[in-house]
Length: 475
Image (cartoon, rainbow, N blue to C red):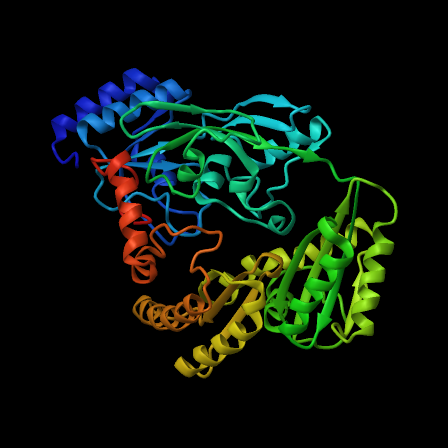
């Protein structure tokens, strides 16, 4: 499965060069370095070569060669992942398969509300292509200017609009996939109904490059919203926020696009470490929420949101609120919410928990998790924020910047166990939107049932018998 033989490695390089041409090969050590670590600089490895195919057929030929030579392949998109899922190991034997040259928008079909795109297309480019035909592609992430749709699909990315539109899985109708042995599965059908057997599409979405290479996808488009309204609210506890979500859904239905939460500690972290930010509300509130609604109609949206907030005030669900009266104010609200990711590394080293729970279980979980974490370390700095609308919390513990690697590893293990035990007890998931990768692989093995693990391994063995696809990740 390795290429430790230099002659064999050179022969493979020559054959790969014949497939993709000089523009498709990165062999220089300095140039390869950009592909050999993740954007967080947490995981580092070495690749034997970086291959950048320009077509599906080239990708198929590359995979056929790697399959024949049992050469491990790590598929990479924009390399913006949070779990080390696209970083090669330290052996120097793995090929990095970069999909960034396959970035075409193949077709836009406004009548069918679909768009067919290649895996290397940037998310921001796809959003703009939809807007160009008066449509809307709702997947929205902080890294949308750098991440690719192939990576989004491979990790089933979430983002801020999951409450209304769902994860990436819900936004894809069909896929084109190159299998480990080089065969091509063309499932690029823009159908909402297709009852012709197993849904192969869902097998590859979220598989993190361990079953095949996603080369293209048919994506869902939606009518473009013409109006948006948002508000920032403060309240006394997270239970009130959960009931506020229920009230907002009752009043706004599917116009409710985002319901983002952050604790007072998370807000203060942003105010301390991100420039040009200020608290939208006076005084201290234990929890804050950023609420956004959108509609294809241009009138009545702000009034609807204001009426819902008034109901919340009357029933003591919130203590204070302010409407985003302008685009600048809306952007200021979102800058605070998105600033948490920037603020954490500036303030310390974060032990991250990307978890999902039933929304009804959130209040009890937060109370129990805070108690359990402080049982491990009384002075623990908890940074709790996330997408309450879909039950996804980022329940992080911030360690001092000078914490040693050894101490971080020990603390991570101890905090993971108490937090993840409570997540599983509440029928939740230890990975909500960032994927498993290297970061949570061992945790997954600890918590998945033997039956689930066995089924996953059977699928893996069936499609990738030589185990060349992204080894050491996910399973």
